[in-house]
Image (tube, rainbow, N blue to C red; front, side, top):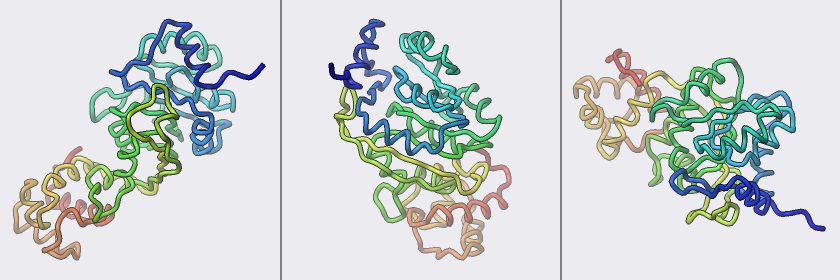
Length: 285
């Protein structure tokens, strides 16, 4: 007798608890064995690792992490799936939180922040599309960021995060993420890898830290990219800085005053932010 497919097993688990995928929560469960295996492989060594998982669903990834000897804190918003995981995986050691992974758009759930504050940790998840970017950006901005991040997100969002200056997708989100580390797309996933299949392609994205994210940089970067097509002094002025000081900061950073804000790399933006912050020490995230 053949072994049921992953999709069949997930469908049976949902049906057994009277559950169906909820579009309003962005539920698209991974049902491709190769895709799940790629996600697990990209997560790095599992035994002894500490993982946070956002949106564990029926626990396909969670179960593999636990079986390999990892410690897992999972945050699940869906009450029905929380009850399913409470019954099936909490007895195996899963630390389970019922709630939203985002306390606010700029803060993660307190349980995630507390788990991350203890020591090295990793984020591994099939992220719901609508919370993917804020979860990623808030995670890398924590005092102790993940030592590795491996997530499935919408392909377009992944391409935005790995974009470079000069690309149409280049913006504050990519600049902030790349200011702190290196994002990579390791695998593209067609809709058939999920149940129900989304209308877009997805991708497995990894990120590894390289340097601390300067406090306040994320907020500042979002502010100045509102004027991305303006030349540097004009962009800084419209973001709230006196033009003469804006010009002085650009000159001090060795930046051509005729360059547009959108042409700066993440490292150039970080250097410019340091000069701006020195001039305006009250900048905050």
